[in-house]
Image (cartoon, rainbow, N blue to C red):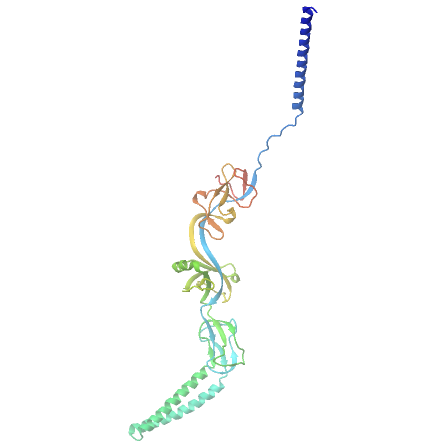
Length: 366
């Protein structure tokens, strides 16, 4: 083979390889184009959903630490009327609910036996008095002895005492009230045989009503220190929504070792009309108070120290805070947080920075 023919063959083989390579490149480009054309579109990232949340703004006002205890109304003066003589009760003029004044007639005992005794004593007294007057005249003139005069005088004095006692016993057959008050219990009925050991009625002084409460021993020092100025109120369900002011009257000087409490007796102030001893009451003692402060309900607090709020960008944020001054319902808020809008606890979110929309209170801008 000549050199010319070998050169020609080599050139032909090179052109063939180049063509094949070009075809492969074209096919690869076409395949890539088709793949990109048929590839599913990737959706754009969706915007994060804005969550509606219930909110509350702080209240600015007075916040009190209190303790509320159950108790009952009682009378400061309860008197049980007992007869001073024995006899048959012929009349009972006072029934439960009857209001009595001092001297009002409560009941009457049959006076006849005591009237007879009085008549007998009166006759004996009149006789002894006549004898004494005669002996006194005779003794003054020297016509009788000292012994006769002394004997007549002794009989006179004894008869006078018996006469006075008979008058007193007759007066006791009319039983009267020693105090002003209302009959709260009747112990006997008309016709009963009564004696100084048998109670007739029990009278309660409704103008001096008290409430006694058993207070935990841990408050003993503060009660003693603040007894003159402590604000105390009573709520009596049977009397409706009216709240009655109270004043501490007595504080027990000792702690009950069994209940670990001490007794505080408070007097109801002002108009107590309609209140009856025995009525159930709830007594609220104000232990401490701050005025003009921001405060929130416990429904805002998450756990024991987390508050969620809405910031100026409309996203949820949180701050940790442990209440110091509080009562059973509300707690004091730091002054720096008074303008925040807080998110009620127990709602479904939440992560810091999550977009939220306030409902229930305007956004605070914080």
